[in-house]
Image: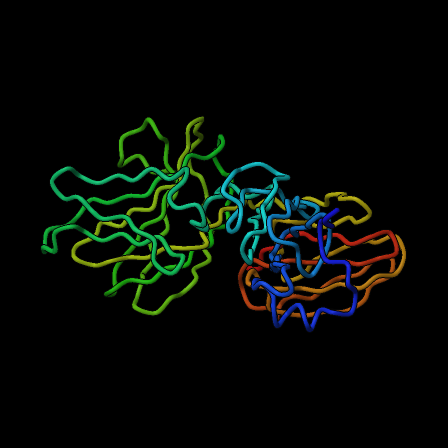
Length: 325
């Protein structure tokens, strides 16, 4: 009977040379599972290479405090777990988001899913994806101002609520972009919070605090582009509610766990000794150290932005999202 995956341990080097080609009547293919923030993808059975037409189960496993959003490569369905047939070399990757994230589709890995596109009928715009960014450009290059907005529905907000916004942008020319919290049913000039940003030709990430000055049962995050002939590209849009209680999560207690480190440090308690690492949103190592019992992670020198705190103890590995502004 034909095995479900190669069993010849120690022949990886030979397989690597002939993978995907007929060799002594055998075809086999490689499955790649790239690392990603917030979780991992596991395959069953596990192997470096698989026989042609093998059916392999893949499963997205989120870290603590994260959830599976969807497959970004290799799987066409939204099922988790799901199966893939190994008839080509495959790369299977998943997207995970913080459970506290209010704009989970802010990375545009799934196009404009959940985003409402608004333009005046007299001044339409073209919405596209370029190098992973959402890019918006008027169809007609005129000097007339274009009333262009991207809108994302949010959970209920209350007056005085504080939020931390992170957004990456670039523009074909220097251009103002307004980011607002507003009531879905209110007139456009009824704004709950506003932040005015300036996009340039260089990709830059902006971190801003938004404070709701009104309550709303139907709030929206609104990005007002007001384009003329500029093309503006957006990515990595994140909105977190800026509360900072001490929260018990698993074996760890944090002030601002998964939310904000507003005073330049993260306080924590662990049961027993452990090690910690701080990484940026794109996976770069920022800092690392050890802790036993209780301690303070000084992050005043860590670059502003959103990242991940991972702690390893004898009781397991846990990862939390933090924001340093």
